[in-house]
Image (cartoon, rainbow, N blue to C red; front, side):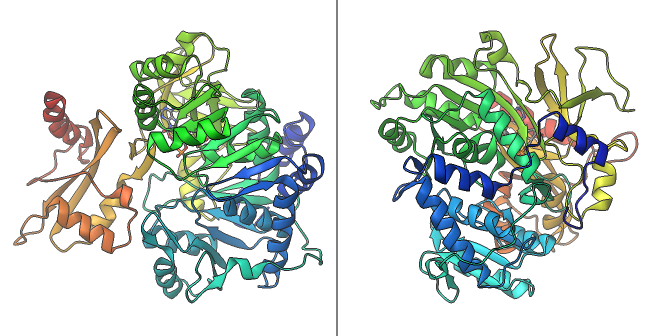
Length: 540
Ligand code: J2J
């Protein structure tokens, strides 16, 4: 495994192989296999393209050859920041052919996140669109390149500006790229984060392909399915649970869209006869409401996955009334562990739980503050390890020491209880993170940014309940002496100028004289949240 990663202990790795979780295949081998046995079947569809498996395999091979011409080698990290376009998959599989590692940034990441991801991963190249959703990624890339001298190449899908045109990297495949071993890292995902800056999650071919295969099997994905990625494909959920990669694994069709308005997405579902898709709770609710006025034929949809944040039972019911019995709750994490309600689960399970661990190899512990197991059915901290859950973040030994137990369990930071049927109910979390409708914001990261403002003496960021998004972000600040208090719009401009992703900008800024403290003298974030939660609750 790449230096800087924490491997599974050898005896456990051996067990995962023997038990049949790890098949010893790489992503490149998977695509080559599918390009042969599903050659003429549509693999990827986006707003402008319809690509067969044979063509996807050939395009990935040519791009791999072009990228090798840039001196990209096995193990090199490449930050990929592409929206939901077919090129995402061509780039992904080209990197897999070389044996390079795709570091997947979200389309909404900005300078602050991208510089960090490039530095932390030691990236040699960065792949972007020219423009997307009104944002010019070439301007971002120019800033990133100034800050990250190790970044040798910027490759652009579209008008390249001063950078390399992706279409110019179309070369004749010929030389052997070296490739990867199944135990090598294939992908790095970005963690939601609980501390200063997001952490990188290394996923190997073995573990990620198992994640994908097991998810696809549980969802009954077959060659006739059509999977729609309406969430960003750079996020674990729409990528691999089962996601677009699960669709390709099953020999099915992956449809990628950037549309957000329900009527636009509904048109895609009707046109492509989409059978499976994944959403976060606010979007699921919006779609359910939109079915009341939309005339689109959505009858092809047989599985609607909802996850990323807690889905309230009343919203689960709303989804059921709008789409029929197609709902599946998913409680997942880019770090690994996935929980699904089974497609044939009783209604009570689908409405009230966030699902059951995917694999018999998933080890779950629900523990108290002292890491002692709680009684069955009691609420506690969720710890987990297993054949597709990381053993450590990339190049983060200090963080790993607190995020994992000595015997390798990942501390999810989630508070859960288990029902007698083995399903988990997510009741809350202990990690200092705001879950804004599925977008994760680390409180500490935002506080550190705010503290750099000259008018801010101290900052504390908390989640406040929100009817639509579940939670929104509220930043409490104490003004520096002699400075006028900072308002929300000023904070927003300041953070944007620092290159912070737009979804991390606080929804609310409250100026206070002092923070309430707990008995041990720490800022009492619960008391702060209560200060703003009550007027919001009253207003509803
Ligand atoms: C409550 N909280 C949830 C749920 C995730 C599938 C689905 C989601 C993610 C994801 C993912 C939740 N109810 N149903 O990667 O493959 C919160 C938990 C969890 C954190 C992980 C997937 N589903 N969560 O959301 O890495 O707090 O992955 O630990 O972005 O989201 O966030 P992330």
